[in-house]
Amino acid sequence: MKYKNTKNIPYYIYGKGAINQLKEVLKDGYRVYFIDHFFKNKDLINKLPLQNEDVIIYVDTTEEPTTEKIDEYKEYLVKINKSNPSTIIGIGGGATLDSAKAVANLLTNPGKAEDYQGWDLVKNPAIYKVGVPTISGTGAEASRTCVMTNVKTGLKLGMNSDYTIYDQLILDPDLTKTVPKEQYFYTGMDTYIHSFESLNGSYRHAVGDAFAREAINLCKEIFSSKDMMSDENREKLMTASYLGGCAIANSFVGVVHPFSAALSVVFKIHHCEANCITMRGMEKFYPREYKEFFEMAKKQNIEIPKLSKYIDKLDDEIVEKLYNSTIIHEKPLSNALRDNFKEILTKEKVKEIFEKMM
Ligand code: NAD
Ligand code: ZN
Image 1 (cartoon, rainbow, N blue to C red):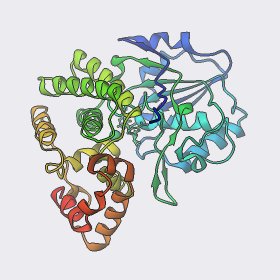
Image 2 (cartoon, rainbow, N blue to C red):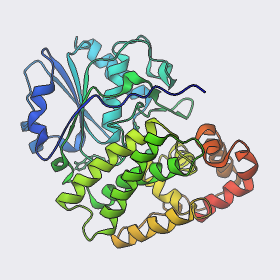
Image 3 (tube, rainbow, N blue to C red):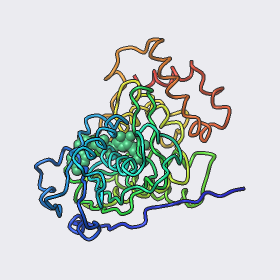
């Protein structure tokens, strides 16, 4: 038996107003900021210790990161002669945090983003990087991947590497105040979902389990209370997101994420909303969590979207695409359903599950 060598985030500053300490953790020299486009012309920008020579790239998060977009960022920095910054700073949600991670890897490694989609393909350490999440739930701030879609091949896969992990985080719950309510719920639920998936899997790890259990406890407290976005609950959710991200470093997701990924690939639905839609079809696999999930949504007055928001009818061609994009996720599916998952998830069965989401 060979045990896994797990890396977690080496440093983090946690607390309301922690963004004001960003300066302390930046290295000397010019810096490159990746910031969610929501913050353009917002107050947050005035709080940053900007220098004249720094570069700000606003990340348009209308669409999730693509390998092409990551290549473009790199080419742009090379073109303007800013490809060797002292620090890269990512400020935003999963999409922005992941873009910053991917570019930090790509600036010290030759080639294109797609060359590093997979496990442990990044050879050289990345540029020193600092992550500042502004919405909680994906755990992207803590994880060792940066999810990107390769539009040409349809592959949605990150650069899974210890080099992808942030060197430093600033966890400031004040930054999540402005998140729209629906988005707050969808993204927050990502940590609840991947934590229960890992706890229900066959691949277990005692430390991962402990992280996941606490992430779930916090989510239940937050989303069963009256106001999920109170000061206290935003603090708790930032904690749950971080713990969930650490949990997943030691385990795998389960049935929800493969179905959700298929919705993202086939219909371009954003990850966290796709997870929530997928929950409509998950009663058989996770009966307790299914019930809890919909109770929490009801308590917070959140309408979980249906797949019919995106498509009128599931015809054979679409089912074929969805089936292929689901079943390709062998690691999580065998974690959840053992090695004979293909016998359980027949095409008929997969269709039935997607029908439940309509
Ligand atoms: P996001 O980055 O996609 O942003 C969602 C929306 O929230 C955007 O419209 C953005 O502008 C807005 N937003 C963010 N912060 C805000 C704030 N403070 N106020 C107002 N609006 C704000 O959000 P997400 O759900 O955190 O991330 C999803 C992405 O994360 C996907 O691309 C997914 O693939 C990726 N992901 C990565 C990992 C990982 O481990 N790296 C894990 C899960 C998901
Ligand atoms: Zn997720």
